[in-house]
Amino acid sequence: MDFFFSFLCMVLIISGSFFVVIGAFGTYRFPDFWSRLHAASITDSAGVILLLIGMGIYSGLTLITFKLLVIGLFLFITGPTSTHAVANAALVSGLRPPQITNKTHKKTNSD
Image (cartoon, rainbow, N blue to C red; front, side):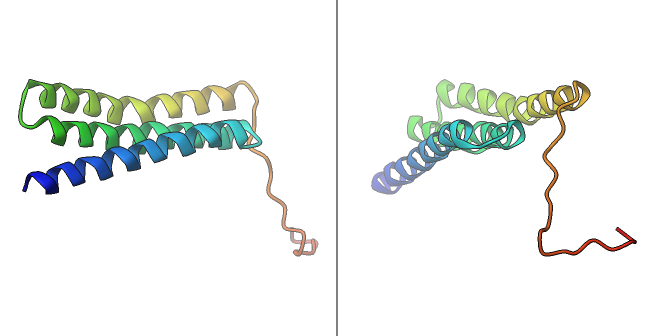
């Protein structure tokens, strides 16, 4: 049973680290603000929550687990809220998402 919990913690921590690293690369590599904002929000939501769950299982049922649970709940609430606030501020300041054009679609009078 101890091996199972250690393995589960290892899988959760490695997968959380994977999401954080991929989100960091996405923040660096994506071309525009909106794509970068999406990569940063995924890093916050998926990566950090998986890391906290893995650390909570590893530490057992202690005060540390309760603190990790409170941190995870705080991040789960504030992460999407802050992403929404940043996106709303960008829209208000005039930054618009890029328009996607379909090059195979021919324009007609009804378009």
